Length: 165
Image (cartoon, rainbow, N blue to C red; front, side):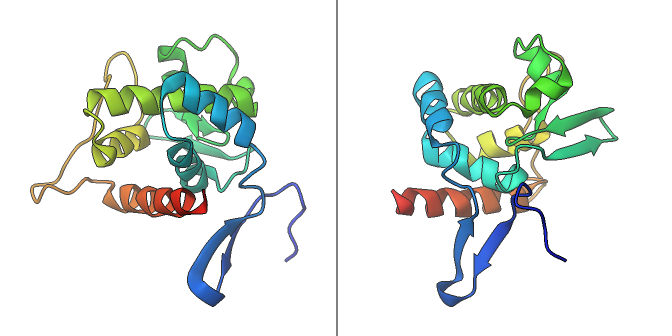
């Protein structure tokens, strides 16, 4: 099945097992602005976007357990965005500048709360944020995160984007 050009997909290059996304550089200016504003490495923002949406600004995922939905590039939950000061409608979270702003704000808060522990910050990002549950990175008895696969994949992408600089 051929996908439309507007649908952004992850393309794995078999030779060398390197990663390439069709539009991984499309949002560089917005990412760089957010990175500067919130003091978060641009490569980390790109890694979260790669994992959350594969750079698809129209990405959507309904979260039935939360009765909420994740929107856009960084898959920002609507109620998380509201807790961070967002005053728009859910559809506004599909705007790349808005989505990257609030997603990076959350990532920045998580990094500060975790004393820059990337694993903890990323686990908490994946869980979401609200006024009732401001920071959450639950661990299993063995010390790994319940969402360890998520954390590992973002860290893998982070390394990839750091090496591309």
